[in-house]
Length: 295
Image (tube, rainbow, N blue to C red; front, side):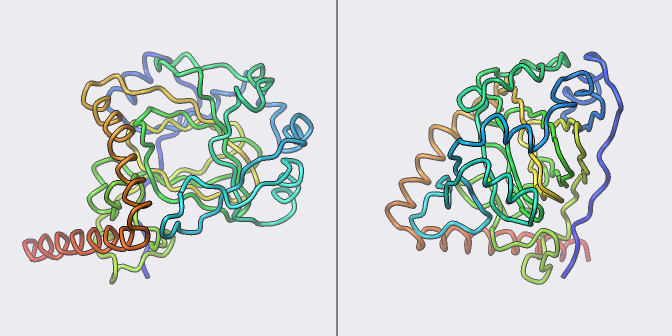
């Protein structure tokens, strides 16, 4: 077993709009901003008990990290429970159960009073402020967002680990065809370099997030997330304005995803196995060919 190579993310305490645009947005470089939320009411108020008090009676869908099989829809939750019961689990024990893409406007609009859209030069889409919850030990499969938005990810209550990979690293990550994630059989914490040799060439960016930290993830960046203890995050997104990225986003949403859904429903696990075998063989052949050239 091996270990993915990483370098630490650039960290700043504060940043101006001009500095953010020139140093990070234009060159599409990640950055962690430590004090971006210090003036928000959320910085003082947001913890698991506060969320439980506001919306404990809500029924929420929960997801885990088990690979999807056959005709199973990857967007389908594994169970539902009261938010208060789920938060009690987060506070007391490790769990793989997560809340995914919880839309504040639809589910807990009172939280809009606790934060502000930061004035750093991004044109945020204000209809989609979404939250994510996870327990100690839960993991989010390495992926990039289908809409190719620029993301600012804010974490609260606890600590989490995020490993970022630039779009240029995609060729080493065993990206599954017609999907935005890599092979679900890969253990990114202890990858099998014999089975997945191309991972030896991957270079990631390592991020440790604590309460109130803000992480800028440029368009198309992969992210692999681990919750080190129970906590939650909110993501604000700015949709792509660059013509090439905009075209790719539209293709992902209106062509790639519908095609994948049709193939899954029609062929089930045969389609999944075919795609996974294809990308494994293709990536490994490229790695071996490249390694021979360098000898």
